[in-house]
Amino acid sequence: MNSSERLTELAKAPIGRLLWKYSLPAVTGIVVMSVYTIIDRIFIGRGVGPDAIAGLAITFPVTNIHAAIGVLIGVGASARTSIVLGRGDHKYAEEILGNSFVMTLVLGIALVGLFAIFMDPMLRLFGASDASLPYAREFLTYLMPGMVIINITYSFNNIMRATGYPMKAMLTMLMVAGLNVVFCPIFIFWLGWGIKGAAIATDLAMTAGAIYTIAHFMRRKSEIHFRRGTFRLHRRILYPIMAIGAAPCIVNTAGCVINAVINNTVYMYGGDSGVAAIGIFTAIAQLIVMFVIGVTQGMQPIVGYNYGAQQFDRLKRAFWYTVGVASAVCTTGALASQLCPRAITSMFTVDAQLLDAGEQALRLTMWMFWVVGIQVVTTNFFQALGRAGKSIFMSLTRQVIFLLPLLFTLPSMFGLNGVWLSFPLSDGAATAVTLFLLRLEFKHINGLIAAQK
Image 1: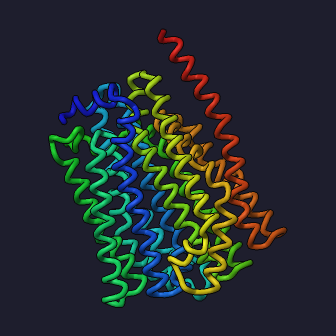
Image 2: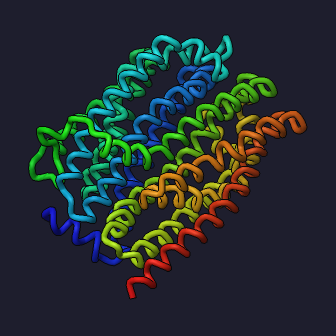
């Protein structure tokens, strides 16, 4: 399929088939990546021990901060690229590509430098105990050299998908996940490297993914590619990228604050086993949410392109198809956590204390998870439309506006269970806000449709 056919497809192909075509590769790639992350934790839990799982959980806020830089550029650039391609402006799309590459490198390197200087104080701030700190430090030390590479792989994989190459984007993630699953047991068990083996495996796998992704954008046959003169930074290009990417960036950054509060609160009421339990819950919840994000990544180029082309009926259909799939996935995850939480927890550990803590955590945190799908889809929908303000606000509702106050109040009344109950209560409140904002947005879109007739 040539370049013009790829773009014509976004404008004219049936929405259901188009969403399936774009979402399936995205879902496959991102879920495989999430599964290999879970497999890493299983290897670490069974090969190193419960304290290592707790140590890995402590590193989540640090890696999320760095990932925030990746999504700031990657998500914003992919959304902007779809919109400007919908308007037929290839030159501007390639300027977005070049500027994004430079900013990913600059911001990523600067952040890794800060991590290296303040590693131990950060890990203590995020809840590391004397038992978990050595594992967290060792994992992060070996992961840091590959952090910039990780951002390149993820960010430009999104742009690859947004420019009409969903299958190549999927193959990138499959390659990275496959290499990691092969390297991880070799480094952890056979070479006896322990938790640092998981970090080194990630570095090597992501390097392969970055090489494959960058090679795609160096090919002149690609829909957009690197050109001389596009790497000079311009405010007119960077500001819209960062405005759109600010929402997921804030989500990741807010997640770091939330994780710090959660880890410290859980440690106060449940010790290291409680921190390890939150690591298990995070792994399962992340797998489900990543599936939904994969579907929304398939939705994003369809919505962005048709918004740019002013085909609003197609935009609406793409959104509601995506909501239906996302809601079904989140409902399945919520039911599984209620019906077989111990079986899920036992994948990660054989430690009796951690099994009990993990089972209780899953039961209480996930019982309202079935409403999360429409929240995630709506946030990404606003991103695809370039609605930076609404997207940022949506990103803050669940994790900051509702969850954080609950984390400060409920544990004092209900102990450790108060931490777990904070999650479903914030899910319900955030959904109410989501439905209100959606009503306003579709009122505006229906007005645009009426004006066209």
